[in-house]
Amino acid sequence: MPRDFAGLLRGASLRVTRPRVAVLSAVHDHPHADTDTIIGRARADLGEVSHQAVYDVLRALTTAGLVRCIQPRGSVARYEARVGDNHHHLVCRSCGEIADVDCAVGETPCLTAAEDHGFRIDEAEVVYWGLCSACSTPPANGRNTRV
Ligand SMILES: [Zn+2]
Ligand SMILES: [Zn+2]
Image (cartoon, rainbow, N blue to C red):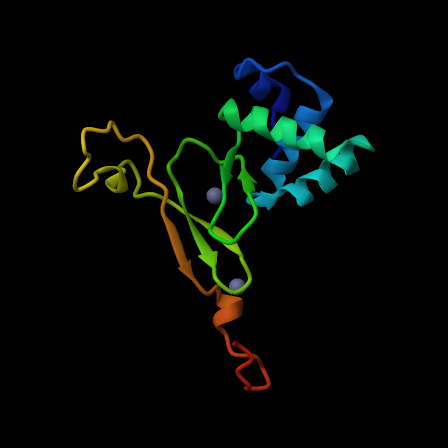
């Protein structure tokens, strides 16, 4: 699905630059990508672009709310373009695979904390840990290779 990345940038009051469009497009195409993946994609689009330039763009996009950064325990930072819907993540303990989990439609039960201590809560970050289907399926030779 072609997206109007320039329009998204303008809507967030960010100047439209080729690195910003390339990075935003890479994050849209590769949900939960790490920085190295995004740098690789940006280079495929733009030719040579420095790590620092990509980091700077990711920071600007994250600050502007166009990109969300998640960092499950033990993982490098991952970026996604699905923002503002309070969705959660499943993370595989073994291979690090990440999948999206929707919040209940139209409701945000996880935002109703048992005790809010006077905070006005607008976000809940829930990570479900487990094994993905590939990692929880025993290998074909029947031997359990998990440690
Ligand atoms: Zn796995
Ligand atoms: Zn996600």
